[in-house]
Length: 108
Image (cartoon, one colour):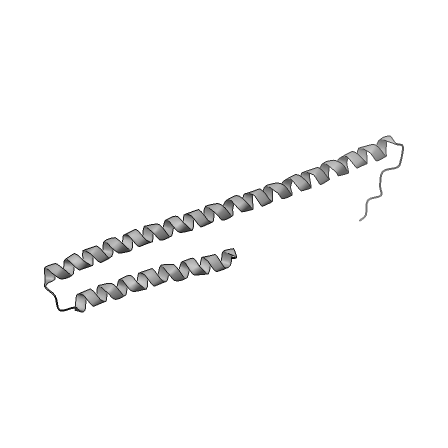
């Protein structure tokens, strides 16, 4: 799954949780119950929402951490390839100059 698809899935899940929480709150407020029962259910719903949100945030953090580590490794590998190419170019220039060959002509 691509990073963009994961991001969209995470955003959808977050909005689904928020929407269900708001729907639950509205249902509780409109339900024919005593005030103490409604407040108790509302408190339980809010606590449940915070728990689900914390789990969602932890999941996103783990996903970001995993992708970040992969990106860092990829960039590090490319840096080594480029460094090796630069060193090889320098060595080729040194070898060419020490063998008596004229330096290459510069364009421009």
